[in-house]
Length: 234
Image 1 (cartoon, helix red, strand yellow):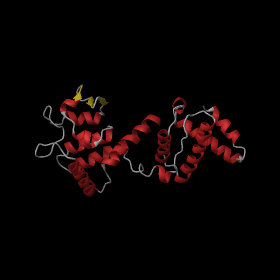
Image 2 (cartoon, rainbow, N blue to C red):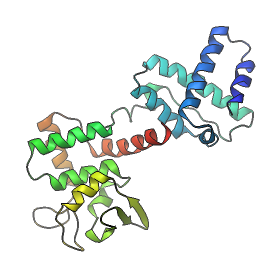
Image 3 (spheres, helix red, strand yellow):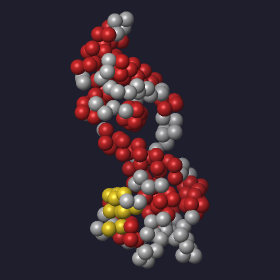
Image 4 (cartoon, one colour):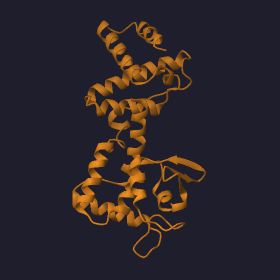
């Protein structure tokens, strides 16, 4: 598909020599990021992961928005000529990544956990919930319904709603040292009942206030999705 770049540049007869170089450079950068076999299955999510990659590499907003315009132009050319099946258009950075701008990297999450452990007692339950939010695709309501018998192969895997989920080593480490009665809810309140969503919001709010951090269930969920995309397409 890289051969289409030359076709695309030739089709832009009204472009200056400098602009043609800029177009070629931008599309080449995209191909460096996305494997050519993956490009055949190109979709908006993959393009947005590329934009996030550029932002994490500290490209300036103006440069990223220029790249977005060129990429949108190139993708429309591929669609018009039957090289891809769908029209793909990504909004400029100020709109497209507004909701994803605040995410947590793996290193940042590790530092955050150490910070919580250093400043609060009896954090095992809360940290394990944060790990599930950050390292898995599970929503909070699914996490709070977990029981000991959902896990198998020494906590390497989790089965829920007919889905088998491979667990991160951090979660496995916490689970192995976490006390839970068989067939009982994994996360309980001080009365021994299933923990409520409100309780989770409450301890996250406490951490934010005491540690001056910006943490939420939504940020943790989005961080999982974006970090997964970056890991797959980097």
